Image 1 (cartoon, one colour):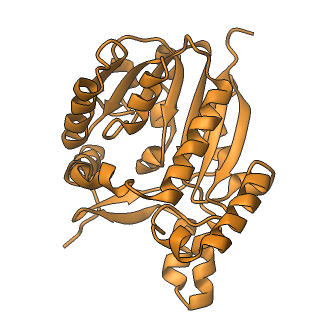
Image 2 (cartoon, rainbow, N blue to C red):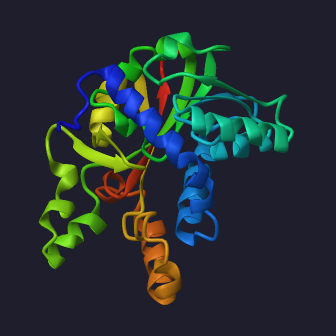
Length: 276
């Protein structure tokens, strides 16, 4: 049986189904997860270097709304989009539980349909933890940016690159297939909650090429370059001294080349220069 998606609609249906099934355990995965909490703080600190207090944020692939709710609590007005109904149910619950109706709205929409986003244009576009790796061509997103991003606006995207040192290290254990999966052309078949769909990996240069000449790179740093990826839940507790040492190395080097191109993810911030 061929499990590879045969059309864009089929692909996104699979992604929506997978993450809807995952929604119930998505937030719980972060409970008492020291490494994931650190990665999320790194992303937030990066965004706050560039976002202005009055910015209106559009979050792509918002999931259960963890990040959207965080920024709303910080005083930003946030509009969140996602295609997974299960994820949006949890996001809606956060709005009510955290009393965020005046700052956080949401819409069931793919990031390839930004021309249909309500309430634009926005000053800041945000996408976290590899949601944009679910498409083979980032121009499917960037073609709509002039309609949703105000001139002079900024974006921060957290994307999985082809080179992850922690995965490459699996070569030492003879796990060639897993160690080199990100390097394969044509994407990799992912398996989430019993659903298979294709994922793709991008370099910072590919992201900037997709954004086009109207965008200028403002910030770039690797995320989990020397520290383990987010799926290594127990690592900080099993090896606390080693983990603390790796954190220091990561913090010192992850924003410098070539390490800012590597990692489980990289954080890229760019600005639209149409106002210049």
